[in-house]
Image 1 (cartoon, one colour):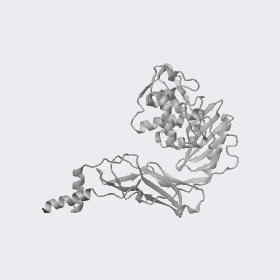
Image 2 (cartoon, rainbow, N blue to C red):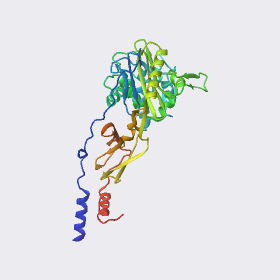
Image 3 (spheres, rainbow, N blue to C red):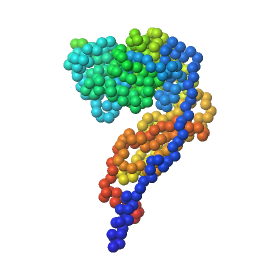
Image 4 (cartoon, helix red, strand yellow):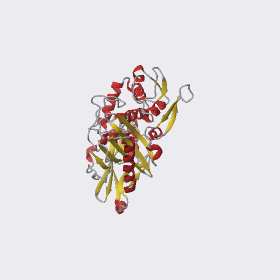
Length: 398
């Protein structure tokens, strides 16, 4: 009788109700620094934006939401989807990519792929990032999605996911076509997304390389973005030009722990384009600094898991979490952070699921909120596992 009663108590404990996600207090929206025109930055550009890559803080903008043709800057989103596929294990850098007749027919900037020619994903990425290969872009699009049309749908879905409200893609390479546009602000958003993949600057930051080096038709790659050679800290991201779009650039540079993204659209020539992005970088690095909270991979805390194969989920920094401050800001000592997570979360949990927020304060003011994701997948535990766990707690058995 006593044994049966004990079993019944354990079952009731296993099936106890968890504290719901909505039970924790929702923090206030983060306070962002207002953007303002600074001197003569981007004076000749039709549109421009200067953004801190870690926090997304915009420190300068000029008509940043105007919808304009982006030319080959389009390929930033193409590379985002390639890197995402690699990160998810759907694609490997060593995978072969065969060139279709359609891909080989692309004009404009190209690496002169022939129908049936095979290169690896790694080689195709070089051709896209450095030589702005329209043919390589279509080839990898077909590798990932089957057709360019299906890949373009993926691009637009990703744009929506990133909050790119001024954007619609009609192809994967930026060749002139109807209903293909974006804005400087949205380019900065997709550039920020691309930079989350640590390996990408290996391609975008290289000044020169070779394709088919040991063949009878070697192809010398020279990066169309000359800042990666001539500006200290520059390592990407993508240039663009068509007669309609004029000269465009999404540039990125990193000094110490501060990484900036500078976007200009509609510049009159390459010299002006490079000068104005250089001026934007110079301004940012002279006036701003990064205050780090956590580095990528740092442990942040834990959250209890209800009915999971493990009882706790470690919370790990997926990227660098920091806030942008003006240099000489004496209030940096007032920076503090708070982990906002529910009391527990219920299994199953998928890696990448939103599990809470990291809120950064300066005094009582919210500076920034970072969404936190599950670092691993946790499956739902079986009944017997839950039964043993609950009984162990009941009788203090380790």
